[in-house]
Image 1 (cartoon, rainbow, N blue to C red):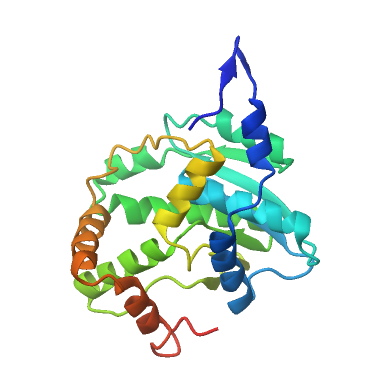
Image 2: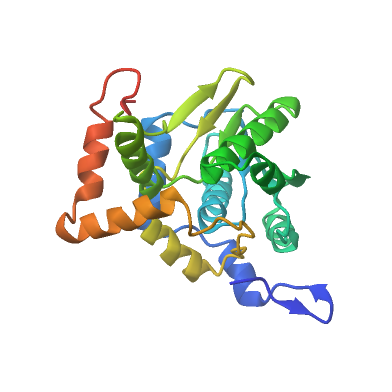
Length: 258
């Protein structure tokens, strides 16, 4: 749901303003808290930058970390940054961050143009890597030592299956990992939370989800894997739990052990 506009000026209605100050529901907050604790994601004095794409996951992540910042005895600073793709409307994100009191920056980069010029066969992976690199470099240059990304358990399972099916490796991304080029540590506080829980919470809080302008959305290998997993879960309801167990029991280099 987008923020409401009124006579040419952006203005929040009262219910939305109240929602922006409301904590994440207990169940989702426990999942996030468990991930933060298990992988020791945030420490005293950290400067945390949230990669804010405008999608539901990054909005919930920012909302949760903002609430944590207000309530936690561990003091850390918080900001958000968007890599603006062509056609992305960022005004609602600016308004949302302003309502939270979170510093917000937008940088522009023609990633879609580069993908088209390269005739990139894996546009999602290329875009994600490029955006992560841009945000990480900006974080390093501006003194942020942690980069928070909104990947969920669904994303981890999808990445696991993509690696198994396409490279024969049982692995996924790490909940917490140091990017050696920049010295910035990537953290994924939503990694134990499901997409469905995030969707429900976004609707409840009326967060300003932005429609992605990506021309490849819904037509990628990741989407095909997502559809495949949906079918698998019809017969294996605890599939996510099984994959999570696999990830926590891999070799030392790939394991999700804390």
